[in-house]
Image 1 (cartoon, rainbow, N blue to C red):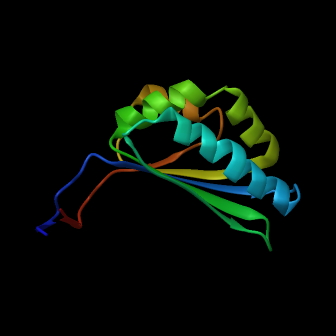
Image 2: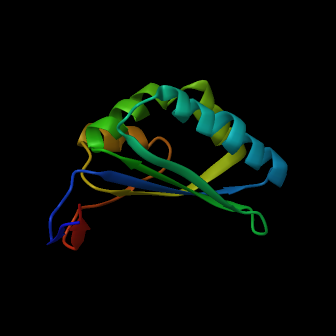
Length: 130
């Protein structure tokens, strides 16, 4: 395995923090049976990670999405913003914060502002193993 210092990759990571008031089983069932299923059925090889984490005691959650690059994320987002699954997500969860790690277009930033003002952070440095 090769390790390189400060080598930027094109991946886009999205962290979405939510809260909810529905019963925990409703939130869990939505994540497992509806939301994850939609992303699974997209069969887009550019989706590297799509994982939910819930804290059922304080009724909060975090969704982590990692995409090959920002264009993949924008394509997926354009398919799903305003779709029934996105509307259902917004019914069950309140989006508290969206953090985008990577570059995205100004056009897509404006679309995201409809859901929540995203915090976009650009790559500065680190290590990467290949």
